[in-house]
Image 1 (cartoon, rainbow, N blue to C red):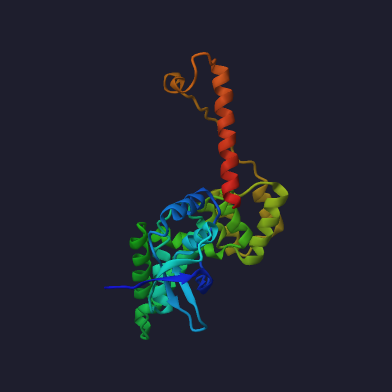
Image 2 (cartoon, rainbow, N blue to C red):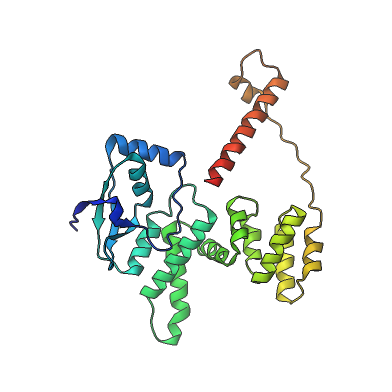
Length: 281
């Protein structure tokens, strides 16, 4: 299919409604800006016309932002006349394989694509509902290179309160306990947020499972939740040992084992600070 590439002013390109993928000013963005300044935009964006004028970006939000930072006024775009469902599918597919996608972004993207596929395959007879649901989840999983259960787990995260979802994005709550927590009622999730803040601890998988069970039984109140969250988690007992023959080559001959250890700790601290900065962007 022959398609025309048009240079469109950046001001006429509008973001996709409910776009789940964040545009961050990180190291990757700096590299994209540098590439655009040197070579231009190598891969055109994809957009569709808007009824109110201008164009709705489907793929190319990061490229548009990079063009703005590079001082460009236009960018190359392929304009396609697509309906909402087809646009959602292309939008998700063009972003889902990127590195460093947050769990919240993946959760929202999977849900948006699943709903778009279901609308495309919707039938009005009652017997088709479960079949359409199963085939739709299978399609999302296959095209994302994962399995059906993983897609369901990510979609389930959309039931989390925003503050809990943020903790998942920051790595404070693991994926598995987060899925269990998502089954708590909204008021119970808000209570959990308060308890996490007061106890300065996040729930383990076991704790999350017990809270879910109590919630289903109608027994998850303030005292029950606090009792679960006040339990002491079993401390880790393992020690990490690094073989000297593998790390000696990275240090000057004059370095003692103690100085090597101090250097490794300092490098790890810098690495952790960089990760925290990246997560805050």
